[in-house]
Length: 397
Image (cartoon, rainbow, N blue to C red; front, side):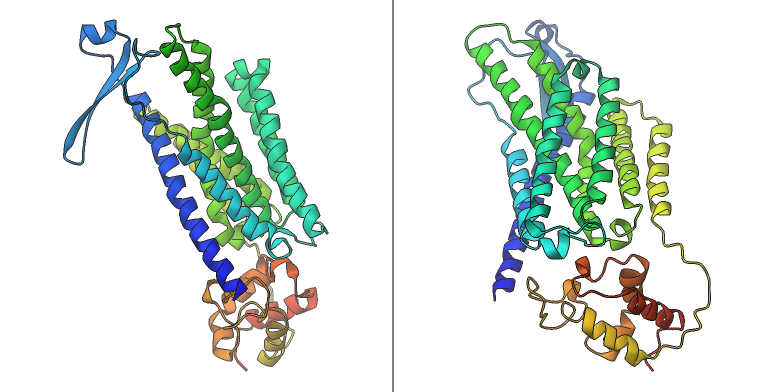
């Protein structure tokens, strides 16, 4: 019953996370598009009162007229809409999911003894410490003199992210490394909203209400962080869904693939932003797609075409699977933390094992990500036995 309840908590948290993330990212994408689509105001009086750009759009059966001030209007409107809770709730729901899935079940999802032998609390400490260290270093770089030089800052941040991908991959399971890298990006993004963007907006509003000239530095800093968030968005989303693809995060070179995917996501986002401005570069898109293709090639299973002469019976394979896999992949899993078989995949009968032979081979031999964290201690000889059986045609005899 406890596992069943945890499943429902996980489901509701994930649902909440997706909803608020859609609201945050949707608003972010919209305003980036809006900023890059503004035209100079047509009416002279609009320009005279500080309007820097305007846009006409049609949606949902109505026509909208949006205007953006170069800095701020002379008088604050009676109602001003803010965009902040979408970001905060995305981070809070995401961290709650990280805790529930990866920290409560650290032995299953986060720790891989073949990568590094960690206790549960050591793994949790490293995970939380990585998030705190990442946002601290990022804030320090952005607030340093380096922050005034966008190209140099981007280069240093790129090196920081490469080091983070490498470090996480050499501490956690592949799945744990990917999700923590994404959590690091998301923490930086939410931190940008909480530490720079919203405080800058509050300072702007306060200056208007007090009749002072707003400090343009706040707008410049907020714009910088908004741009960073724009380019972090696609890589962060990718890492959140990557846990379903063991062929990616289970490869020993997965951290390099992760870096390539970050580059691909950022460049593809650059291309979309350029499209908003009417100056999209096919080169940028091509490089982004090439980086994605390179990541896919890097983690592709490269199995030498060879004949395994070892004679293996189905009964031998079934004994291994019952001993090492059925604790999770059963109608009623014995492994704590599982209310049902992962993805509904069960290995309790001959027919079920044969039906999922390719998955068993890929997960236990090709990528070696199963059993999770190798909790049931599947040996290399047992993996070789499954390999021989699969190569011989995965027969049920």
